[in-house]
Image (cartoon, rainbow, N blue to C red):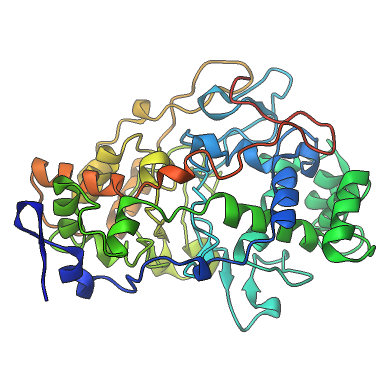
Length: 438
């Protein structure tokens, strides 16, 4: 039986046929919490000891106070200082560069609904590979990972721009440069030995695992994954309340926006299900700013770089929209600073791409200089991005756009803002913890 909500808009109950798997999110959809492992993972996540030069942590680009990301289009990774819009390169680190893609949000990625991670899906569940998780070539898991989050946590440690550092700066960077990732002398083993050498970490892993066996990088990844799944779970939004049957959980504009989202606007054709993602890849023409993954041509071919399939060119993973109002800027390159801007891009992607003003997406300063205006790709590359676009949404009025944005705000879980636990005051290595005030 159909029910009506404010303004005569059909309720979500009436639109379930347009969306896959709209059951209310339950505790059983997430891994079982082990608080000791979660707390251990928190310290590791915030500890710069896991970076080659001991100067950046995972949290530097994925911080709770910044919506589980970092609030800028493209991060400054290794060699940077500060958090969020305060983060910058320094004269002491002239080699610091912008990371090629926007730091993705982490909310709810511990849920079993998610089958692949990263903008290009380079980490994915796959029953046909060892331990059931596909990793990039050369970086296959050596031991089981308890989750996709546990596996993906091992990859930023290997990126020279993100955490490993440049050739000649430290042994981890040297191993990465030589292609020595796995094995007893590989980069992962070097990092695990660092953690092993800290008495507090060693004692806590011994208690957790009931074993004194030498630490392996998988132990570290599993602890970080447990923390991420706990810290960034967000399932107490007004939308969640509505899924649980609270008919008055949404305001009238939010209810109208929901009907548009799952109906006329066809948003749910990609942003499907209760986490608003189909776990698939689409070419929607987000402007390419920054270096991209192909540094020679300022291009980023997205999924095609993983699959080698031409039709996958410029396709990127559909992000979950949970807490989306907290996670600006948007797109694989972070080109759009507001929800309205990225929603309007979806309505006219080709015009938006070709008319994009890069000065609206300034990048953090490098080497102590001012903010950087991004460089756009060549006209030829822009035309290739444009030709790949498959997005086709019916025209919407300004009022309808505003209602959709209202619905997107209904996906915010106020209890998850800042993360469940937040940053520790200190970490066992004794290295400084990044502060939003730096």
